[in-house]
Amino acid sequence: MLNIIPKPFKALEREGKADARGGYEIFAPEKCKRDTLRFYSYFPEGKGTKLKVNVTLDDSLARESYLLDISDGAISIAAGDAAGYAYALESLRQLHVAGGGLLPCALIEDKPRFSHRGFMLDVGRYFMPLDEVKKFVDFMLMHKLNVFHLHLTEDQGWRVEIKKYPLLTKLGSRRSHTNFGIRPHGGFYTQAQLKELVSYCHERHIAVIPEIDMPGHMQAAIHCYPQLSCFDRKLPVATHWGVKHDILCAGKDFTLQFVCDVLDEIVEIFPDGFVHLGGDEAPKMRWKLCPHCQKRIKDLGLKDENQLQAHFISQVKDHLKLKGVRAMTWNEDEISGKAPVDVTWTIWNVTEKELHKMYAEMERGREVVNCSSVPNYLDLTYNKCPLKAVYTQPVDICKPHPLMKGAEASLWTEQVPNIRRAHFKTFPRLGAFAEAVWTPDLMRNYDEFLARMPAYIRLLKANGVKKVTSVKRANPGKVFGFFEQLWFEKVQLCWHGLHNLIDDAKVAKLAKKRLDKNE
Ligand code: ACM
Ligand code: ZN
Image (cartoon, rainbow, N blue to C red; front, side, top):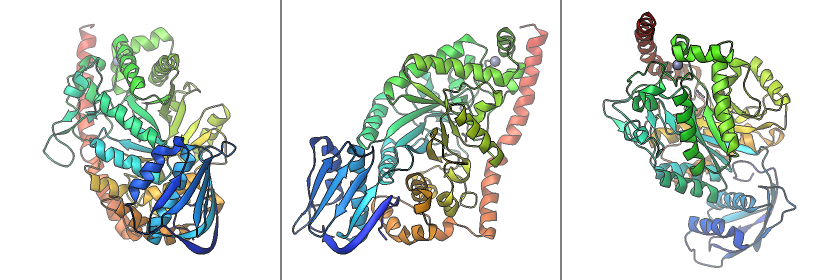
């Protein structure tokens, strides 16, 4: 058994050990320089002979793939591209840490199962300092993940500087208090910082997909520019979580203008060709009462508010397309029956029956990424998403399809107010997820994965993970799991249900008054 997570596609272990306690001397093409220097930085200069590593790039090999040959005198690496080389080094690093510098001799032939191996981080609920975000990027490379989905805007905070609308960060990045306390919370990234983050990701062979969630999850923006909402409401940046009913008004021209202006700046920061437009959890209470939205529905001959959302997203998608950028949305866009097929769906809330509908969507030509909340929402309890379920999931839903691009593990942060909590939620589930998207089903074995856990946990701790959940805690029993879930649901439900109820009554009264005045 080789202590590598995710488990390589093929590995042949041989007799003997290679001694790397004196460090490495790497001979690699110029193209690989950055990856080589990063590898050197993992290990301080040792005493004794250095182990020689010969590297070739071979474009007859598949992208992201590599061959790693460890014999007792030397190492050779052949990789399909620089990403494949970086992954070979990550495997080598794991073997080095597990063996204290003594490497098992082996021939490893490795390649990924899926092309989209993602990690989503919600920095909207809780702002995360840039250095901590970068550490997550390092962990992504360690796990051979290659798509960083950055959820940048939320009801509880707007995190990206937009030069045309400065209030978004001046006012919209801060909430007066949180679920967890009476102190204010806030923060945002300048465009320069985000460009630096994108370069940091690219150096680690990771593409970045920014998400600007619309038309829902926009209360922070509405706080700054109340005319974005149906009733020009002056609302605070949301303090608690839950689905908010005040969303962007899809009946006003200003809304589309605003969104397109914001995206024009976003695509300049994030050059990887995709922007995620959200589209999730957008209740239509306001649109049903709003004269602007109702007029738009009538003028366009639409059936209902869901079709208005599809129309809105479609306009935004076309705007991106003019710039050569593709759109993604969460799969709620399906509700209208009108969602454009050239929008990639990150599916999150599907029942088993609906999974088959997703397969039908792929047959229609839609690309799909599996982000199913169970088991891939890392913020959910270990009761709901135990380690074993993350590991054993069938990533491609029903059966393989070329348009099933892969999967994402998502760390939402409603209940993740600090880094320690973020790490507690993420690890070791991220290891199980990484193996599910990298290693073919037939080669995975949960018990054997558990045997690799001690070395994995040591590796994480040596690399600054503040809290790794134990395997026992990550697969809680029925009783513990019940109480863990009860606590989670209590925090979730007690506030926002009541709040929305009271607020809806207020808006209904406002709408009636406007109607009476014929406004
Ligand atoms: C989501 O969890 N609302 C995408
Ligand atoms: Zn409206």
